[in-house]
Image (tube, rainbow, N blue to C red; front, side, top):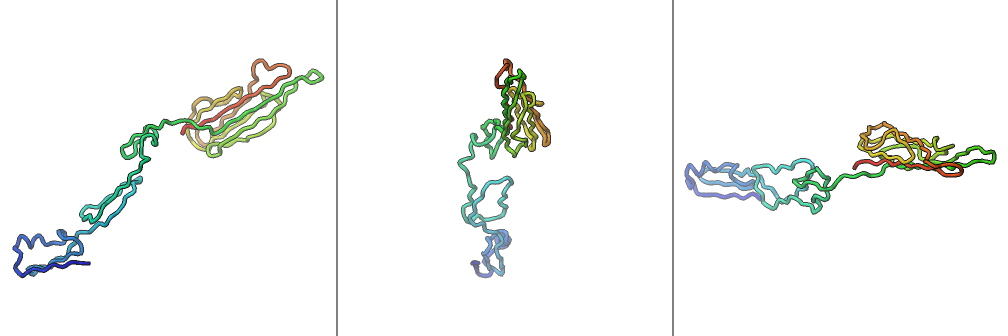
Length: 209
């Protein structure tokens, strides 16, 4: 509700009257004195709570803060919860980056000599892939270790680490991969595989997170 204050005519000198302007009075306050009528123009700011975000929230100048203004904090804003090299509201992260597995592949081949003395091989390959980052066929039959072949295609650009054991990749080690790039793996015969024996190999693809 607006408040109105009245005074006797001539109760204010010239200097006082000069101060009776809306910018010197709160909104909702009116003064009548010495023939001068002024309604306040300073806006009032009620209690408010501010949640930090990605952009600044500006509390405009020229307001009267009637109640508490609360800027929220968060107990989770600590270095251990922030990636190393990143600063959030002055807190520098300490969480080190690492790799997560996004694809694996494996093949197994049985090698034997049949009744006619012929070298016979047969086997299977399997795989698993996180389709958020790549795609590949995950199962198939093979006639020998050197026929074991799998391909992974990147669908999310990033830094990847590629390893193979008896499964030779066309790219290996840490690689920056773009969408659509492919890594192919070919089986390698293990040393000492003779007669009736089994040869196997595997690979992993990890993504830097």
